[in-house]
Length: 434
Image (tube, rainbow, N blue to C red; front, side):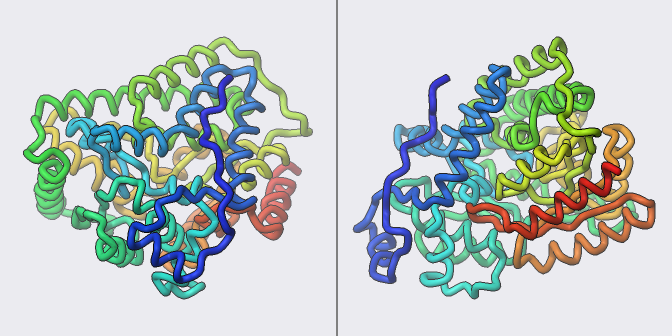
């Protein structure tokens, strides 16, 4: 199987202020993919692909993963429209506007170790700041002379990151912000929900004009919504099949499978073909037994793990994440019985994780018996005060219902997980295995 990951260029491990100024001015346009941390991150992706050598479909999935950002940026240089996206479930809008969505979180997984240096030395972010904000700012700055300088974001995602977008705007990025429209209440009146939905519909209309130069055609967006729902249906089928054979697709591969629903890795037809192939494999594959006395099924709730060693630790200890609740929500289709932009707005405020926190918690709780999960991993990023509060609320909710939880804080930038993080995961799985 060919290795589609780009070659890693050797660059200085750190940049001084003069070097940062040269990047900002356009005098230094070299690609910077560096450090042992990055090499270990990409190496783990390659190793995971090799570990799934029995599955051609998983191999093709990782081909898409490893080539995603570079291929999207290359397509943009060749004249294809593309833009970075910091939001969930916007794939139908982007593809209906003939624009490749480039996922912002990917710069934290496959970016360089210089990113945090840039955040602290150039943007003057305190070391205690959220690692996600620092990694995104730093890596996009390092790529400024060779990447797409257009970013579409949803203001409900992260308030500190909203400040970061303005710092990037000052560096020459074209930033389009879709104003937030959340449903923070446990109970809403229909009139209130309709007001929020109508507001967000207008915001998404403006997004299509920014992407397309003119409003998107309803017929084209409808086609893409149907594709999105078809993809979600295939993912639900795969997760159901995987719950019967959870070791056939390991944790990291499953996370990327879910992430693909948000952007299709820039190659919709190839991604959907991977889903079809994986479904066919799971329908006929022999059950892969656990090497441990018992298999501990878990739910993952929160951000996507950046340090891939977290997933390796879970797999190595005899755990299997069978219930997934990340920003890549797969539980609800986009409505097809209302105008398409209104359907997108309704999906965002009602179907996704940006709806009511109370309803979101209940959705996770309802999934535990379906996937046989006996414990919940609550994951967030170091330095995120919002996430810390969320995990306290989530932990209390599940503990009141007799469900064990483990709160994890990881870094958004590349690098191995801390020994403390791995030790806590091992202890949690050992406890549940008794």
